Image 1: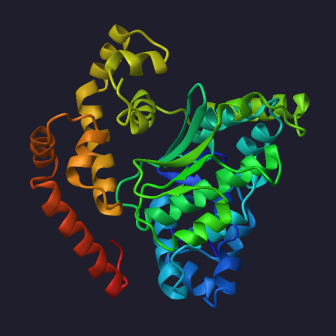
Image 2 (image 1 turned 30 degrees about the horizontal axis):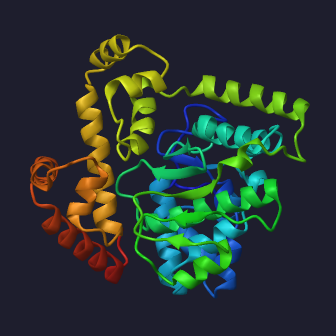
Length: 361
């Protein structure tokens, strides 16, 4: 049975992931996990227009909103509030297609993670992965870019569990993160601590792994120059078929830049490999400005933190670089027509009503 058009994003051509979609590899364990928890995976998949047969090919694609809805349905059907974590526990680099094999064949841990952050777009065009290298600690984070995704905390749990598995594949089963961060409120924290075997911080401004920077130079036992070259060629070919636009690339960078103190046009232009003047000109050609893109990223991050964490509005303002909470409130009113507190109350009420009636959020 072919999946319905409601569930699948139609790619421009074979092998290409459409905007807002991802390859289904990270979700391959979904049917087995649901069945083991006493649920009916076939019934849940049918609700979003998918079939179990579709999960036989990790190269198939699914919209991120559909993935979120599927995880929400599974959570409700099984009563398991950490189902994303359970699915992620069973996912390794090999489930990640060309990007996973590029990572596995890389010379070092650092180069492996750069392969992910640089080329995730050929695997997942609904989120962005970033790496921030410090003198002692490095943070590898994953941020959903698609608005309105249901049960986004399940997607973050799944993604960070996969990242942890990747580190164990590269560094050995005894490896532990310095810290695990989640941008949602705690649910069964002991379950998360047991799997990660590391400190877990909920209500963080982002979801990610914090690792020792010293590990980045560690060489991989699985390094394979020939395979690495082949996968690099494969990824270049895939990227050429569905190149990201300037606005897409800018939005991907801003997803995490808005959490940093140097969220300026010059910094973004440098990250995109062009001068600030060229950047402004190309944005104008697209009918956009740096400020409009920055506001969009701030709005998305504010909505996510207010909806999914217990952070106070004043904390969210500080995270986004507002020194004056009143300025944040004015900006938030401009985005949403209401105050942060009123928006949070309405968003959580809407979520509870949707869950009670089993409807999409």
